[in-house]
Image (cartoon, rainbow, N blue to C red; front, top):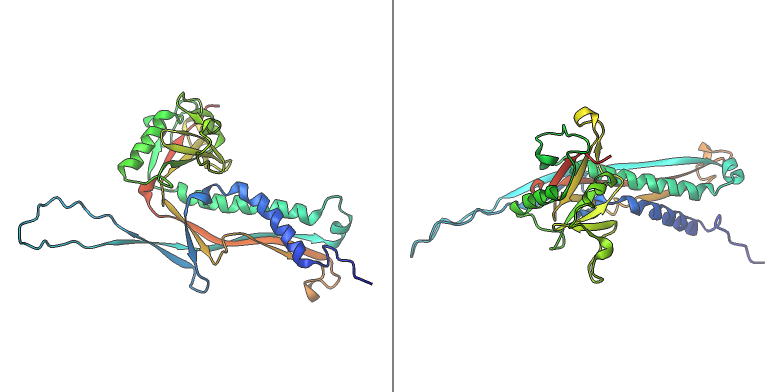
Length: 309
């Protein structure tokens, strides 16, 4: 008689199912990871990686003298280092909960862990790039002490940020647009501009980024619920929001042997040997190894503002 196959006996199919569930919940949270320069890094080469950037040459304004060989120039390189870190978490599930619980426990746990993994990696990347040195305070202010509902992001702030990037010779992403990563509070303010073009009004042939909501003055905006907020940092305790305007190669993402993609790890009941003598405990978890690094401060602008309540 043929043996009946179940998800319990098909361990590989079980793993694929959990991987798929985790990935589905992971992707919506990876906004900040999408626009960094990806840097693959081989295994067994340490935990520190170098990004190398050739510095621009000064313009050659001195006329050549006939028959005289000029002195020439030299190249210079800026090396930026980043150290990868490992992140992860897990949940223990008892056999009793797995057998008697009303919900599909391991699948639901995969969903929760996928959300956690995505949020974790996105916020790690966000906090690194938001710490950049090129900052613009709304309404011409000189510091983060901004007034609620007055010092907000509008078309003028976007034009100023674009001007800064163009003065710095920063290149648009994919040769056409800068990318603005914006939270829902600031989004509320910028979409009221009369020149705002909603994504629904684009021509059919135009490329649309994941999460894109519209464009203004050469910037395509992508919405995220993970936008950085400095709670109570403004005048009279106003919350301050960070909107990132990004050019190409502003920051990098380090991927060690594919380890930046979270790995789902399921240990079934009975897999722990003498540490679990009665086969009572299963675990499901994730881990990832990555870091982000700012590569060019001149290729990003952080607009700090309050928001309309």
